[in-house]
Image (cartoon, rainbow, N blue to C red; front, side):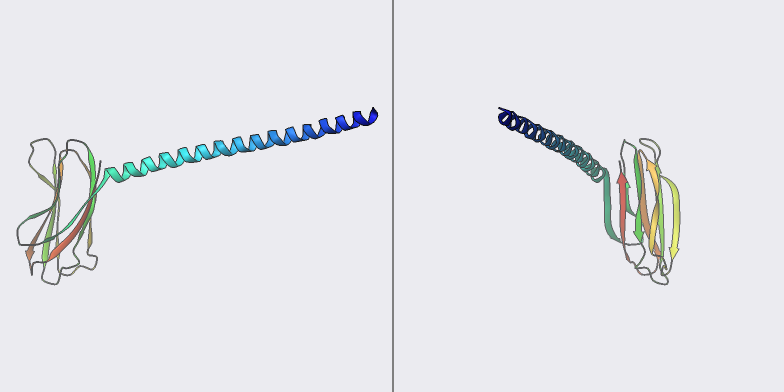
Length: 163
């Protein structure tokens, strides 16, 4: 009988250890599941933000060949507020060329365009990438280019509108 009692006690002890191990595994798996859920939630939120940024940051790019007239590079009109900035490349300019870049803003619906910045660039440029300052607009922003001297050149531009 003592021998049976020892066998039962050992069996109960082993079952207790097995139950403790099983509980540890269940806790570890549960924690791993929670961590994976949180990671997936974080990745989902990050993806949504990236998609939103891509949708809200619109590039406007192109190239224009000057013809002596004031030519519109970019014109944005919207009834919602937006941020606007970008670049114009003057890398094709040579000595004797002269270019005027003018920026306009519309301050109300139906208002005329008003100049808020105008710069003249002459000859070959040491720093040919011209940055258009970031501005906030609601009714409109426009950038024009006019080559006033020299051989007519082509000019690349890249602007961004963030809504």
